[in-house]
Image (cartoon, rainbow, N blue to C red):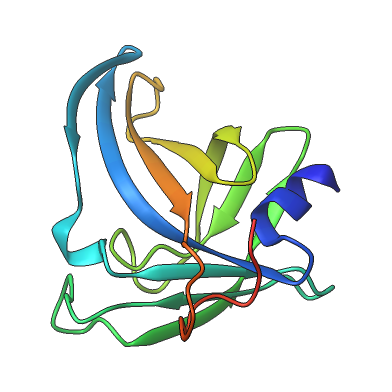
Length: 141
């Protein structure tokens, strides 16, 4: 329950992509932004249905990328696994990420790229800053 409130706040919380790290055997090989996703916003809703919305910005990652994706998110506490849709990875299917760190202002997720779990991407998110007129934010951390 505490983790889910970190993802959602009291009603909803909106996150933005900060940076991605590419790792091999636990060591960071590279750090880079996903330029086409830096203006995207990911909102987790606290209601029972665990609704989730990804709003892509002006910078599209593909010709088929939609402006808005609606889905659901899930969290498995036993495996620290957060399942969510990230359109810059895959547009039509949620992926399971290991939650490495999360607090009220930041989140670090990891997804392994091989069966041996030696190669991964670590995706860093920040809470979207609240400011007057921000259409993506309805609660603050």
